[in-house]
Amino acid sequence: MRESPAAYPPTSARVAWIFFDWATQPFFTLVTTFIFAPFFAARIAQTPADGQALWGYATGAAGFLIALGSPTLGAVADATGQRKPWIAGFGALLALGCAALWFAAPGERWAIPAALAGFAIATVGAEFATVFNNAMMPTLAPPERLGRLSGTGWAVGYLGGLLALAFTLACLSAAPETGLTLAGLRPLFGLDPASGGGDRAVGPLSAIWFVVFVAPMFWLCPDGRSSRLSLRKAARLGLATLGASIRALSPSQPLARFLLANMLYADGLATLFALGGIYAAGAFGWGTTQIGLFGIVLIVTGAIGAFVGGRLDESIGPRRVIAIGVSLLLLAVIGILGTTRDTVLFLWPSSPPGPALFASGAEQCYLALGSLIGLVAGPVQAASRTMLARLSPPGQAGQSFGLFALSGKVTSFLGPTLAAIVTDIFDSQRAGLATLVLFFGAGLAVLLAAPSSLSGGSADNR
Image (cartoon, rainbow, N blue to C red; front, side, top):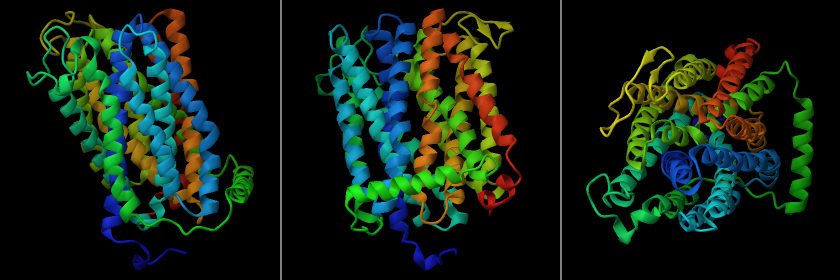
């Protein structure tokens, strides 16, 4: 039974919920992709290939823990009726893991363990907190408005990441050769470029940013009523309900088909985000400035894509948005594999990268392909969140989003790990990145082969 508009909270609650994406995005932008990860590969690991492999292993380890815990925790949250305490606990993990990255100074014997452990802990915290934040979404807006709510959240998150990245490039991260930031300034707080002070500072910055901007969600978003069950009883009840839900899943059900497709293409996205900046640093020799500017372009296109994708979600349905987006991601990855320092799209020669920013044809092609990825990645993720919310049985949002996180993570530790192994075997970043073709191709195939109810039923009910 659909709830009446009066059953939903005021606009301020939805705005506060959206700010969760704003609060978490700098971690994914600054640490996972554009600043700290390339810094780790270029200045902490022995070689870029070693850095890509180690980062892939750390991503895989975090993904394994998330795959084990997400559905269970979501079921427990449904049984207890509350999500905010879980968001607070795992948000603290995110903040602590980010803060630990400051200690990963080049040349220090503990640099690699501090970087990898801090990154893995922060990833687990961010992903688990997201499970519970997503589970709040069906209580905030009617089903026909969930696409716009989800898309707006992603877009606002991108803008938060853009602002944090611009601040880092202008005020914190400086080139070791000149000691100046992209804005021509000395780094704030006396950060030492020789030890990567500005690059390491993105960890504490992400932690502080999260704590400050997640606060409105705790103040203004309503939470479920506590069932007054003990944690032990809630765990038993939640796990029993989860087990029944898993057993009830049939390969012919729309929810099961969608979860399988999401498992595959989300793995490709997780691997792409984890290794994209590292790949650019190794393939083209880009430093923090080039990768940061590249990141700004991707974030701007990502914000545009998320805003437009939310509207497309409502007009053509989330399944079609996902299918179009994954198809374009697959083409973009193939194009990246065909673009090297001296080759564009397998066919055309290119001059090698020079001192000017993005002067070579190969760099410009990589920039264009990255922009395409930014344009469609947000809509794919936002539409996936909407689709799950619409397919979720009443009263089981936390559990369903736990399964959603499971489907997005159960093989996500395999994606980065497989890329790391292939990189190690061939000592080639390009070979490792080629594994993405498998995940995007298979995810698209499963989604397109889904029963007609997935495109015409409740998932696309407009």
